[in-house]
Amino acid sequence: MKDPFREAAILLKHSRFTTAFTGAGISVESGIPSFRGEGGLWNKYDPKVLDLQYFLEDPSGSWTVIKEIFYDFFNAALPNKAHLVLARMEREGMLGRIITQNIDNLHQEAGSGMVFEFHGNTKNLRCLHCHRSYKAGQISLDHFPPTCRECGGILKPDFVFFGEAIPQLPLAAAYEAASLSDVFLIIGTTGEVMPANQIPVMAKQYGAKIIEVNPEPSNYTTEITDIFLQGKATSIMEKIERLLFPES
Ligand code: APR
Image 1 (tube, rainbow, N blue to C red):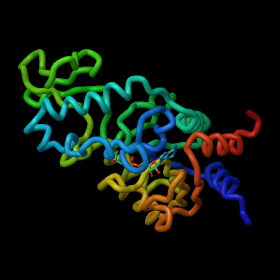
Image 2: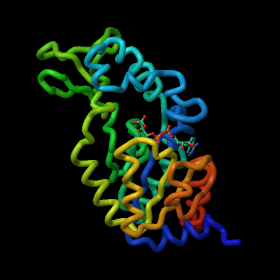
Image 3: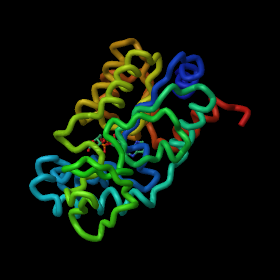
Image 4: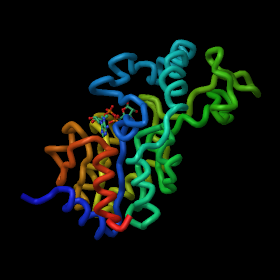
């Protein structure tokens, strides 16, 4: 019986270009709940709060929940071992880029540089009227909805709502990664949400080997995954790190 961890480490060591594709699962051990599955945010909150139409109709109602989920929770979170191992792999030339569905900024805080945020980031708020951008920390969230200091327009978090287009840069970076990568490392995603969930499928079609890290099977596991490392992101990535950097 082959050891999947050794197989994965050999692929990662000899890969010309590896992309990591991450979802909410990589941040669960940093204290940020996932969206689906046990303890998922969508079990507690209605996903409609992230629907653009709903936000425009009821910005105050939407902001009340958005603050609780994305601003109260996220600010306390720190990168975990899985984020840190990916950052080390990048430093050691073993990771070309990260395409993340997450908006929690934890890859950047772990030290990763080549991070493309498919769904944007909670860091900034943007005025729906004059499009001025503000750092989230600059704006009081004591009253809803927060408004633009210049024109009084409503401020919206600068991450992608359901019904909104994916920003051009991460979209192009993701398509390029799918075509370039000979190894695609999927960590902590159900593969539920379009169009993000097509990126690993495209990589497979281009011939990439797919390594997947998840405690549960996902939409990918029986369809495109070549090596399934079943378990939590921190413990799995810790094992991978020891195999990639045995001297450390
Ligand atoms: N380590 C690794 N994976 C984990 C862990 C863990 N400790 N805990 C849970 N998971 C896995 C779950 O098994 C699940 O497959 O993480 C995944 C979380 O799935 P989702 O909550 O659906 O998150 P994600 O796939 O990133 O959602 C995609 O949906 O709501 C939108 O915009 C939101 O970016 C998000 C998108």
